[in-house]
Length: 410
Ligand code: NIG
Ligand code: FE
Image (cartoon, rainbow, N blue to C red; front, top):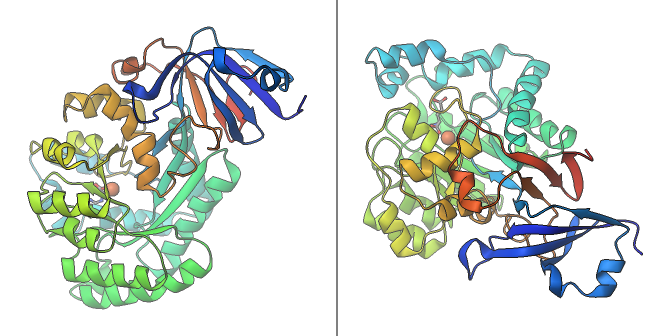
């Protein structure tokens, strides 16, 4: 007997391991030791001595089990909201018109700067709780609403605190190159120089896992993005990019030059960008919530991404301007309806491929021996139901690092 082992059995495992649809194992078992999956497979093949070694035995009555869900692109830490801007857009104003008129990201920057650390933490923790309620065990959180050394650091510290105080893995991304703050009006190159100079200190404080930028006409130019990426590379930090969201800036090819973990949005991505991402092994993160909420009509080049073998992830992009939703399950549904992903591709997009978009593919994203014991038990029989229902939460039980954080034993 090993006191810290638990056996979960009579499960339908969507392991998401490669080689078969969903990596499906009917009548499967999971043996958890501490925070790790010790054994995963068909229950009939579980060695008897391993079965006997677990003092706790949990029968799941045929329920579907998936890896913990991973939301690999969020802007969770901010002050205020932008419901009035939503109304303006409904009356005909466009997202970039509002941004050029000084609203958009910059209005959230003002609201973030006046919020206290406690307010930022509490609002972000509530949002994280909504995601976790649907089986999310890992999130990425970007800065980008502080836009000064002090306020960027504050937002990243709040993100780190979420990871310490909630049963949730949090990866932080510095997105100082999100918009031009008013104090640098007309001086974007000076701002980028300043933002590059903050990075070593933020990194020394352990606040940065990756560096992102918004490369667009209302964001930063490819040359400015390159400077940000060079500053990241000097510190050995991986990069990601908000690329080709509103126009084609050839940002994906630039990011691929830096072996980016991911390029995100991608509605305006062209064939050269697809090829560059395939060559670099960069993940394409699609954000159907932003596509929906901005009422976009131009689709990311899904067929070309598939044909080139680019891994596709799906994320919420939660932020107050372009995607205020907090349901990753709804994103699965929208990825299928809007982008015509298959339900299996959509689930890979919030598990195995999302892990890769965060550089966590060796510890997260699949049900596989040796990986962290993050998994979700669903009140569902078949994995394609995950992308089918919406507005219903079938999440029954969540284990994160081997500990039940939601469910009968939580
Ligand atoms: O991912 N495109 C840039 N950034 C965010 C939106 C930020 C905002 O509008 O506040 C996005 O869509
Ligand atoms: Fe985003």
